[in-house]
Length: 553
Image (cartoon, rainbow, N blue to C red; front, side, top):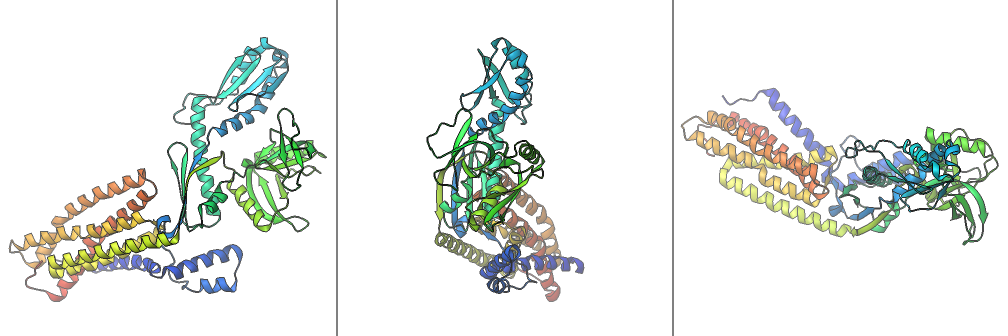
């Protein structure tokens, strides 16, 4: 007999109702978006009458999850950046110099005095006073090598050491360079993502492309220049011992020193040691604040390693100036008054409130490990996004209407049942997109349009099977039951293969391809659910009430 237990009917309609309820906010997109933005701002900065009015524009007991609109629908900025991975090699070798120096100093009786000399950026050159001790020097420095941390560099060390006369040369191994390149790009992706997230943009898409490129798409931002100003700054913070101060922009800083301009004092330059004591990479937090005079400043705190270095240096250099350098400009050069063991401090300068906030954001996000060169940049206006939405809406309506008409003409009353399930299916797709916080792009709309066409496939299989069963002179109840039973395997097989394709597109694709795969996969899930459960429940409910002697499909 054709029968569905009451608990199962309740479960089917309950699941359907909950997901459709989650889709309701998308019918009032502007009001709900204003409400969400106001609530987020109130939590971060406090309540104002305007924000309270915006927050009250949508009931708090209603769901407020929305289908986020992508760059091509909302407008925004697009950047294609190339990470200059080779820049990191010099920093790596520069950071190794203290270890190399300390190791060779312990062998002073064999190698003599040591001195670092200039060489190519990706090489560390050290001259030893006693060339006869080169073999021992090579042995000592090679002992500093560490295994390369990468799958492709198993069994390799991170450095290669060679000698030419009285000069010892340290370079990164090829395996280490490849591992460094990979880490640099991955780190750049994460830092860019954190910087963009810090300013509250909606659903940015930041993905690696190829060996050293990053694609950055941020919906809702005004221009590509605005996006570049946010992520294009390296925000590289370092702390250097001060050698001297001068007003001569052409002064010779001397070997292993840097001549850097002052950010606050016009025409003033500082000569600082090239090797930093501690860097911004060891910062754990940075927050905007005010100094003792009420001027905007930034508080910072180091991790344990940075705190130890910072504390040791301030203990040993009381009375000496200490330069705080941001992107090759001296923010300030205070004199160390006392030992600072806690690993925290304050950066003062001629900041505005906005400037201190921006600097804190950049420092919290971390320094970009290498410079990024922007190869492509585009700004997509909201008008173009609105045109895309209208085009997608028209395409969906046309596809929807064509399917509805076809199903009615082909299957009559059963076609109407399938059409009701199709309408529910589209609502379920938007409900699931809202629940998972997915971003809808123009290819995503194409996935929905395709789902509308595919959604009736399962119903077509069932209805055709019911037709075949009716020809064997079975009763309507048995024909409907056998139609669903015998069509089930074909429905599952056909949709599983398409779902696997969607998963592969999501795993291997990027950007628009992923948007298409998400809506396609969700459409397959909702289509199977509505065909196997919702449509069947509608037909069974109709049959229980009408009890027809014959049916026509």
